[in-house]
Length: 326
Image (cartoon, rainbow, N blue to C red; front, side):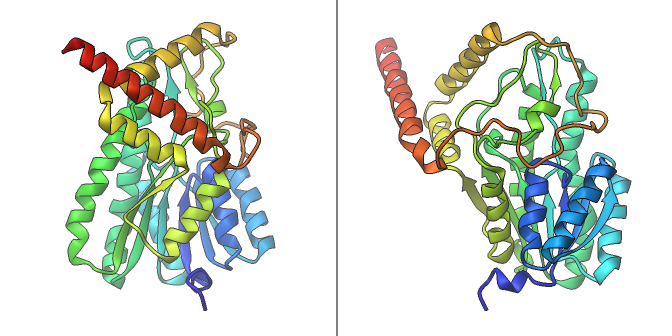
């Protein structure tokens, strides 16, 4: 029996399971006849995912949950534990996005983005850890994204949450080092072709699109399954993710200025759209599929040479500018 086959009968909790990467993860885990606990705010979408997963061979339980509500997360953990008497894997995945000039985006929006993207993950771990410690084992998977290393200009609240997530998770790993069979696994995917950006709070007044290259969310879902079967502390999903991390590590000021420049140029030419809070405060009734329709032709590896070329050129320019100052 290989490691993936050992997932059969495991209880897997997935937050943000109604669309995008969370929905893809549910479908991918379902292939291994797992017991899936599906959490999100959109009950109708969860019902669809439940039916799809059961058709594949999994058992599924839906628990409507707002991850920013700590009491709701405790209820989710208890429901999952009561269902089969254990929780094997907890996937922190639910997240929201809001774009706009920092001072023009309402503070209530920034606050809710942080509540969902940072405190939501903390709420999840806080709720499930007593159960994992009592049973002596378990895995927490945090879908952090490359945003944990690379700032997103015009998405300051999102960046604050993602940078905070990385620090919080590192601290948690240190605490749990005395628990050898409890794992905390962080995933850092590059940009994904999900409906997330369609759902985003938009205070730019312009149509938003993800920066290429964008990757298939099932690539992340397969990584979640792999990490659940064979835990790893840090995993980078997509070559762009690791390259962007390296680029920012060597030239943080240059990379930050470049991302701001790219965003400004895009927003100048993008089509206008009405301002919206998107799904920041409440769920939406559209775009609940796994994909957002932004994918580029070709396999992810096909983008590698272009990404590398751009980063190498950018680094060379950065080093040149630094040497000129000297």
